[in-house]
Picture: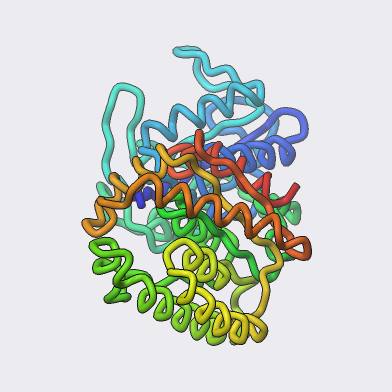
Length: 375
């Protein structure tokens, strides 16, 4: 998984429906920049540095896989889309939306186009007040003072009023919790674990991951598939059954739903590909007994990627024992999944082709997947 950055952003508006502009900017940031982790209240403040209508201001914390400079470019695009046109050298002016980077986990940044921390933040109560609400103990890396201390010492004595109006969470339209139990499935290298992790983090879900790394038969299987197929599949079946019984059966009052990167039915799919006919018959008898007792997903998602892309992903993640996986084997697994999906008329299933998508490097691709899950 690519390293993430945490970026605090100040939002302001003093033209038209100010709350609506803040809301639109918040949603655009979520859809193009990253996960909105924290959102402050909305505050009304007088225009700073010029005479105009009062501003509505807020601060948010965003977790993103983009660099701070890339985030700046995206914020400028959002401003432009909401009718803001920055004019160099003309001083302060009224604006539909104003988006400024205040802090970044990348630390101190000084370029021609970007200075972080924001050089004037300590002198602006309209930034400090909402920022303190979500990051009171965050230390300014140059001034060596917390946001709370900066607020107490600022020379800006402008009147700041906390409003009863609030911005709505940008994730509300993606109602994944209604599924209660969401399974993300896919072939080897399809990205199911990465997607399950992202969804669990962003939507407060209990995450259930397959423990393939603990299976001692897996490296041996890729060296000699015929010899180690049966013990591998039996060990996977036992582990998947036990984990789903334990993890999904236990209610977690602090999580909204469950998301897993596998369904136990994958055991049967892989077994059908890897086992000899007599081994498979025995295996299926055991499987059928176990499967009856397991909870079934509210939504079963299959991430489809073509074989060429799968091989690229497998090579990139660099697990030694996977590097010899033949394309023919991946083709058989894909066919096995698709045959299984066609046979399960009672399942709520979505097949999503992500062969041309990269939901880690491109936030828009991730949002597109969310829209496919909930449409």
